[in-house]
Length: 519
Image (cartoon, rainbow, N blue to C red; front, side):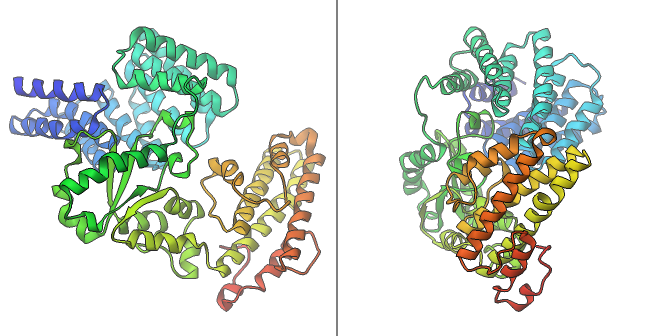
């Protein structure tokens, strides 16, 4: 089919330029031709490209449906499950779940792909290792990620795939950097850059991405703009003029901003942030009834914009991140929502909100927890700090159970960090941003970053006494703070007693009578 070949060339050219939005209508036309002439095998190939374009434009649910449709076709035409085509599609599905933060589902499909692998030395296997390493990176399994990335590099070297090899070295550089192996990170980044200069098309998006990473790594260009700054410039220079010209009917109901998932929404983005799931983008939030009426008439993919416009309803955004379409209101509702999700729901910046509903909910959530909820959570944190740091840490060391002692120490730090956020009335982010968030808080002389890092890094076998002294000194400072702020009167420094004192301040009788060890 000449028409189909022509369309594929068009969208693959757009893919090489990173123009995913413009690809989508061309791919959809290609899929219609496949349906018309029953071209199942070709449809599988195009659905795989379609899912990638949908994923890259933020339409992840639709991407998952597209991949599952291709798997269904593969099963119907009895293609070998060990074939590269089948494995690549399973990997694509797993990766989409990963980007959607559905880590359990992602791991399940990666394992399925690994089960079907028949040849350990081909592109599909390298792709599997590459993408699974990103899942491990996302979930804090850094050494597993590095091990898999090195396996992928070994395969790519043997089959001579220079494009993927350049990208793999860039990913490996990020992984080494995450664990503080700066020399290894430098070497991997140098290899990525050298391959890019020698083998990649200078106009390709991947070439630009790798060279930008290299320049960022060595501060060649100086300070790069933060993602939220790029987003705001994109909004005022391209998105708002577009809406004033073509979408005047929905402009009065629209809220625009950059809010939700991603380090750029927190202002924490850096050189490492740009290795995956990082695009210039603006969120558009609409009331559900308006969204349902107009969504089929919105065609941003045809506008040749320099970034993405991600559209969703106000209600779906708040339900996804806070469990409630209008955000939590009651004490019990606030207690039901994980704190990092409340942080995600209220981060970033709203540029314009003409309808005001999105901002009204946001402002209410930014006022922080109801005080009774805050006190309840503080008591819970004090209990956990006492249990892990003051009680179980030394007992684990005495038993020479260093796995348990490490866990106890980490639990102590985790709940101390939460306690510090609670007294500052700031929602605590996802764990990998604890340190960055603490830099923005008043620590009230309870601890210092140096103390926390020393506690985190010290060997429990040799430094257990020093570690315990740090824990006890922090607990004493906590008591001093609680006494000074008149939240407690007791000077007993075992924090379980302080938790019992704090609970007395709760006004809600049913909440006050609840078990302080349960949230």
